[in-house]
Length: 290
Image 1 (cartoon, rainbow, N blue to C red):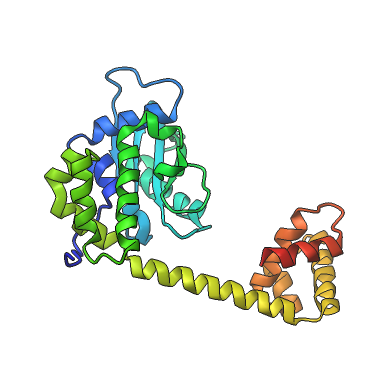
Image 2: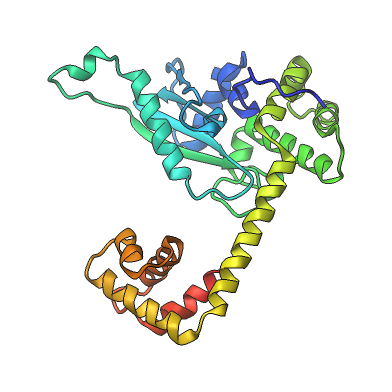
């Protein structure tokens, strides 16, 4: 296995759509796959890259400006991350910083910004909007061959990793070249691709995180089931009263001296039954959520 290269800042996805010699062509192909109307010939594409200073996974994000829009594209990690909207917001702010000169920000006239469009690509096993796994069969993959082959490449790596292969990256690259999957790219940049993969993805860490999350969910369920039904029902009833008074989750957690995570879940469940807020139905739904 190649040693981790700390100087590598790109992921393979970003490299394909930002750094590679065919990146602009790939960007154009991707734009056309995401929109009904193709870009007119000669449309300028402005590639925008944000350093991963504020958010580690910025190395998996890229963006480009075209036709009065700025497309913010990112690759979701294989474990579910519900903070993707936050990550997109932070990235967008950094991207606009690059697009608006400092002096212009102090002028009286309003600054017109290109409209942002957000797309997240996912190659894990959960159900997501744009799942680029080969088995998912998302329509965008047929419209953007390079994205389809990237998904096939990642799927190939996963299959080798699941067998415990210590040289999964190298073997996946070799097989993909043989099968014509990103063949030119992998032939040309094979060793660099291994470095990028090692830097961006730690399979053991991924598995550890999934086990930790499963354990935490089990603990939460145990705590909930261990509580007296009447006590929990009373808590739900108290929270509902706070919701009806417009009190925030944070304030409610502090006032009732309960864990914020528990209060947050009750707020979420209550939202499904607004405006009646049936306490018994909220409680039953709450138990199912753990």
